[in-house]
Amino acid sequence: MKTKLLIIPLLLIFSLTGCSLNQANKQDIAKENRNDATELKRPEIKIPDERQSQELLDHLYQNVPEIEEINNRIMTYAEADVRVTMYIEEEPNYLSEDEYERDYYRIYVGEDHQGTRQVNVYRFLIHKDTKEILAIDPVTFEPMSLEEWRANK
Image (cartoon, rainbow, N blue to C red; front, side, top):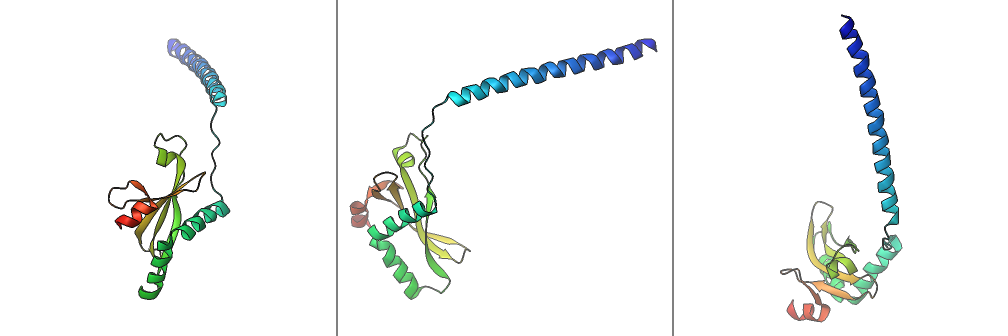
């Protein structure tokens, strides 16, 4: 009986000591990781605010008259609950090696059926710095100039 009572306190002491060493080791490792993370140089990430997003969409609308044509067609012939919707589908990803993912916003243009479903009509890319507009081919998903896109549609 005395042996059992002696073993229990020893196990308790060893387990507490082991836990405190583990905690200290974990804290040292976390500290090293924080120091490594602060030394990394990351490029500035520019996320468009609401005004910048609207400027991108306005730029697209003003330079691609086909969007207004779709809007007019929908307003004239579609049911009352259908409207044109445009939004930034994907922002530039500075970590991507792909030029189009890294340097361009991807813009969705389509029909919105009162939030129940959307039908894609066009997708475009707008360069983050130059505001160059490219169309995305709906079959191959390859970017092309607006001139090529208009000749092929």
